Length: 192
Image (cartoon, rainbow, N blue to C red):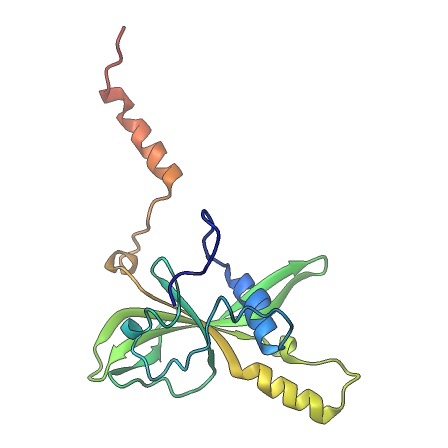
């Protein structure tokens, strides 16, 4: 699947909150109009990250897809391992009552079968437990089945990071580049 079929000038670059609330929640709850037409379902684990191109939604250098949550993150050529020093992060939303946790974000790094680290990173988003609870008017059996089904889905963002990111380097925004170029104005001679 190539990039999303969006009108010219539009890009698919959702925030963490949008991924959980507008995509994952709708998918897991089986709400009408859930965005399967934009983000495909994939069983991640038979594919190495470089094989996802053409199968997952591609936007820039990032790949997006739904998958079932599993502990087995082993592919034919390697495995996804939690990133050292990166703890699971809450995905928050704000309302008039303050911040609310709507999901959790975990980071994984792809290692080859012989244990060599690669630059492939996966951010895995899942709903928080409070989001998977159902209305109290439904039977306990129905609630448990729905909660179990909802907690099975995750949405993944996979990308190959640059070596500069490990060194703390960051890409400059257009505005930053303009301000930095203003320093060069002293060297430019203007006509009289």
